[in-house]
Structure formats: C-alpha cells, structure tokens
Image 1: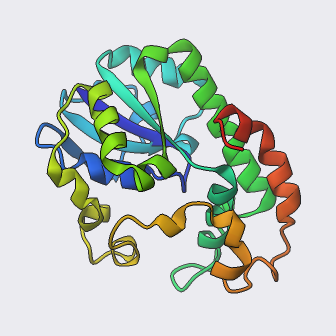
Image 2: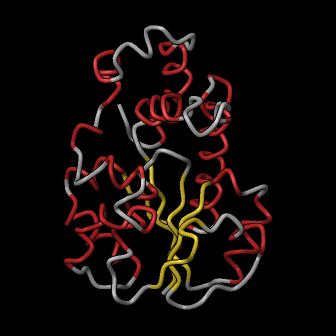
Amino acid sequence: MSILVLGCGRTGTNMLLESLRGSSSLTASFPAEDKSFFRSTRRVFSNYLSKCDTWYIDDFNQIDSALDKNPHLKILWTIRDLRDCSLSKIYRGQPGKDTNLISDDATFEGCLEDIDWMFKVYDYISKNHSEKIMLIKMEDVILRFKETIQRACHFCGIEFEEEMRNFTDRYRGSPKTTKGKRYKSLDKNQVALYKRRYEIYNGFYKNHDIDLDLLFSALEKYQKEFNYT
C-alpha cells in the first residue's frame, strides 16, 4: 500500500506524515515532501509514504493521471479549523532571519487563494476518486491521537504501531530542526488558536494590517464544508 498525505500548508501534514513514518511497513520518501508527485505523473513504489502541498498541483488532469498510474495509493487529507490555519500561515510566513520575503500565503489575498485552491482539489478528488481519500482533522490527531491514527491505518491497510506515537522526534528527519525543537509532544494549545490570537502571538495580529474578521468571514463557506463551526 502506498500513502500520500495531502493538504495545504499549516494543516498538520507534517504531524501525520511523521506519525506514519513509525510504520515498519512503509518507506518515506526523501526529501519528506514529494513536490513532484502530481507534476511528474509516475508510478511510485508499493510501500511509498510521502506528503505534498496542494500548491504543487496545477490542474485536475494531473490528479487523474497520478491516481490512475497509482491505483493502490491512498490519500490522507489533512484539514484544520481554517481560522487557525490562516493565523498560522500569516504568522509563520513573515520575513525572518533566513529570508526577507513574505510567504505567498501569508497575505490576505494569498491565504484565501491557497485555501480556495485547496478546497477545489479536495472537492475534485472526493467526488471523482472517493475510494482513495480519507479526511483527517488535525484537531483529532492532537486530541484523540491513537483512535485517529488507528482509523487512518485501517483505511490504508496497515497496522497501528506504538512507534507512531514518537512522531515529534522525526520532524523533517531530526529533532534538531526548528520544527523538532518547537514541538516536543502533542501540543493541545494548537487547537482553537483563533480564540486566543491576541494573547498567544503577543500582539502580532493587533499590529498587523490584515483584517482578521474579514478574513474569517471569507473562510466561512469552507469551514462549513469541513464541518467546522
């Protein structure tokens, strides 16, 4: 069985990928993110495990071609309350010590564009390849880890293994990476960030020029599609 973790950025793709890397029956790709999966239209090995951001899908024809060539592939689609997702995109996408550039999805328009395309891809796959896709909420991974990962494993035809719990040690291949240092274990504080946005980001959003109320309003139609209230 081959597995692709798919979703837009900041929805828990890394968390789910590194959890599944604990399976003795899967071999993760290197690098961890296979940005060329849909663009290269190739057949992957039978115990393949990787992730891809929907930003690296150009059109629906690429989806059909990739899935037709890989009939045994299962897609685990990660989603997160889009208010939290957008806050994380904006905050993490600001210029930092390594770059002076703002990420494409860290602006009002860029964030909406990224989430809009994400939904279009999800809608297309769920309607045209429904047997291949399973929705996994990031909140469920955090709050109900074993139950959620067991459900994902059952869908993919693999066994749950206790090593899957140790996913934080495997972020980007090493606990020494930035993400590995930031998250030492399941962080329940990552759920419902939007309720504490001014508190946890130390005033960042108060001083930022993005109208969060307007952004959240624009996201409501997608929230409903993914059963977030």
